[in-house]
Structures are given as C-alpha cells and as structure tokens.
Length: 287
Image 1 (tube, rainbow, N blue to C red):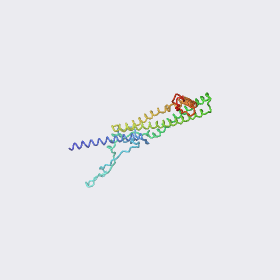
Image 2: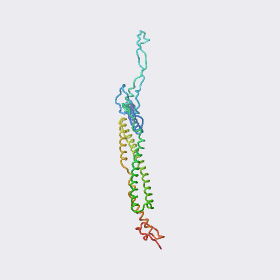
Image 3: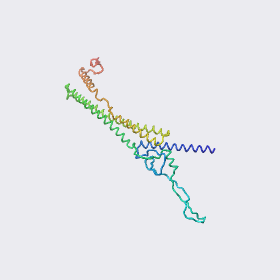
Image 4: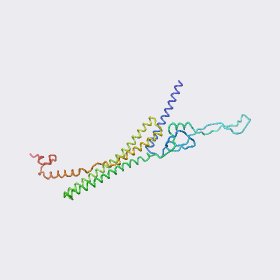
C-alpha cells in the first residue's frame, strides 16, 4: 500500500511540474501578444553563479537562498569538554533545487530583449490608416478622370452649364462620397483582419502550450507568428480594392436622358411606365 502511495505522490509531482511548464509557456505567449517592456530569451540549460540570468519578464534573476545551520570552529583550543572549540552558525546557500526546477521548466534565460508585441495596437491603427489612405487616393484618382471625361462629354454635346451639367456633377459627387465611405470601411476591415489573425495565432499557440512546448519555444513561435501576420497584412497595402466607382456613369447618364426624352414625349394625363420599350403609348390605359 505504501508503494502505491509513493507512486501517486510521484505522479502528482510530475503533473504539478507539467502544469508549471504550461503556465510558464502561456504567460510567455500572452506577454508577447499583449506587449510588455522586456522578456527573457534563450532558455538556460545550466546555471553558473558567475553569470547573469533573467526571468521570463526580462528582469535580472536573483538566485533564491536557503539558510543552513552548521558547526563552525572557533579556533580556540580548550581542554574543557563543556566548552567545545566550535559553535553553531547560520549561513545562506544557493537553493540549487529551486534553480534546477526553473531550468527544467524553461523559466530561466541567458538574455533579455524588448517585447515586439508592445506596439501591436499602434500597428492596427497604422494598418487602418494605410489601407484607408490607399483607397482614398484611388477614389480621388477615379473622380478626376470621371470629372474630366464628363466635362468634355458635356462640352461636345453642347450641354455645359445646363441642367445636365448640374445633374451629372451631382452624381459624380454622390459616387465620390460613397467611395470615400467604402475606403474607410476597407481600412477598418484590414485592421480587424490583422487583429483577428493575431488572436487566432495566440489561441493556437496556447493550445500547443497545453501539449507541452516549453517557454522558450512558445516565445520564439509567438514572435515568428507576429512577424508572419505583419507580412501578410502588408499585402493589403499593395493595391486599392475600392473598385470601379464611375465606370457606368456615362451609360447611366445616357439612359437617364433617354428616359427624360420619352417622358417629355408622353401626352398629358398619360401614365409613364419605363418598362414598355420606351413607347409611352404602350403604357396608356385609357378607358
């Protein structure tokens, strides 16, 4: 029975050590994704008291100490057995067991560095601004082209300065405003996509931490994934996606003019129905 109890105790200790490793890896992942000032890097495998080590948060490691009580010679010889030539003194020694536990769980590091994830919120804002500006510039470019074509077309038709001029420019303005709103929405979506990719990566890495990757591996993989997400996000800045805003403007204008001409040709008191082949008489419902 006692052997079984010892086995249970050993299994419990191993489980506690596993949970400590998982917790350390999860904390390293969250620290990188959430951002912080510094972090420990390059997990140590041995401990040398003469070297400097760092904890997971990047602070300098101070070795834990234990107090031991030991007999120390006083250096005074005596023949009186009641007055021995030694005495009990307390001395602090490095807690090697605690250090071994940190090494085993990947919680002791040989270097520290700034955490790249600290400016991630700013990166989301930069992504939003960059993509929005890219698409806004395309809206402006399309507007200038469409305005020029519209102006020349009206001049050729002798319609400059009239109601057709006013109506077509109003339509240009309406489509431009819609394009600017669309550009802002594309920018918001680009920022949201990057943030979603980061959060998905975080959750995937946490799942891997539950499977047993150590703190050093978790930190390195988190940094690599953030870099990959940033690289993928850069592709959203490579070209505008606002679409063709004014491509059918001329056709829409001509159709509108045709409809207006057909309305003008309809007899008084007749109901205009544009779906009847453009012939107002086909829609007449007189009694």
